[in-house]
Length: 495
Image (cartoon, rainbow, N blue to C red; front, side, top):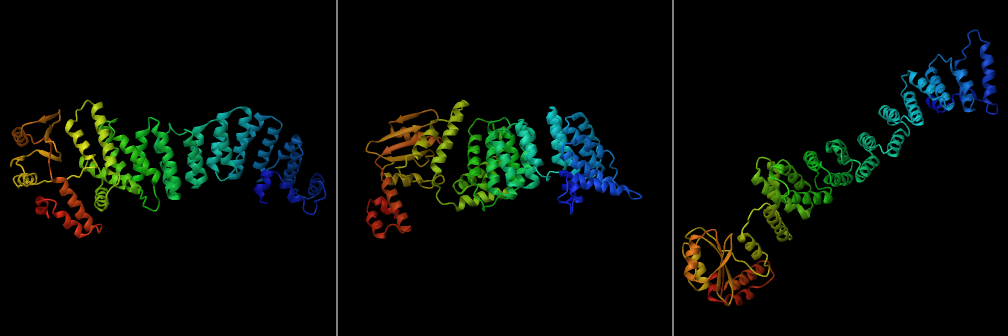
């Protein structure tokens, strides 16, 4: 046992007990005291100190104080601390406090012991603020001292001092890089103890945890995210967290499923129309850049699309490397399975926002969406520059002069046994019964859409094109295509 441990436990006297294990310490020390007095220059300091310990352990506190009053050597500060301990045991708390405060020493261990004793004394006297000060000083001075941080944590939690409890957890998590302290912090977040604290208070702790363990970093980030979402500091959290993550390189060694989902939900919430664009312009660029970095496979294309869309609005606010990565993801992507569903959700959000703001989107938009959602119908797009023969080609397919050479409007032809044409504008959908009226209107109204139902071979052509694609993919043979080329003379022209 080291000397400091002996002094703390008041067992220094055991150094005099060698070969005297069966004799009471009082007798051994008494005989040594008498023998030392016979020397020409007696040194009774250590013996008196040891005698004081034995008296203290046997609850003779007054005798112990008497022995410790005259200890001039390096044991003097410890003797003073022991005297304070004796007054503490005698319930003379004011005297004990004075002695504790008067101790001067360079020993970090003794300073810590004094602070812990003052901590206990202040609790007993009901001076909780002073107790807080003492235990915080002890943690600050010697956080690795046995049980000191556990004592502090227990005291703060017992008295619902959550500010100091959170501070302790954050500081110890950063200092020790121990997952156990991060788990304590996580529990405080889940309990709502951190919701009113500024988000930047946790930045350093999150940075350390990111380096230590990605899974715990993601879990704590998600907990803080959820906590701040319910408070007035939500936008501050998004700004601070995105700034933090922007300087990290998460990589793909860890699948950031929980964070990716949070980024996705938050992005769609932000653009849902509840917030003004000026309130979002400083948040969105970093948000979608980070989302792209950590996106789970199911979100990669959506995050890339968000980056490309916003780079058109704020080109200078999104890093060019993020834009390049997003372009690469889109170019390399296979068919996006949930694209239609996600697009329709976005359309519904836009329409909801428009109605709430009193903005009329027009009948054309809803009509186009309804047509695209008709998954049972095939669509063949015929497009080109002005005067390049589009109208003649369409008329040839239809077998009727429906389209004029200068038609600039968009026309959708559907196969039907009943001929009917509708003009779709922003204001209304109206029926057109006269063919000449249709031709003239289609030439003048470039922003109108026309829904023309008539007997049309387009669906046969689409079937043929789909079959050809199957051949190219090895899912059909050329004989099947040849048998379908005779569908119509028009189809043969296409072949």
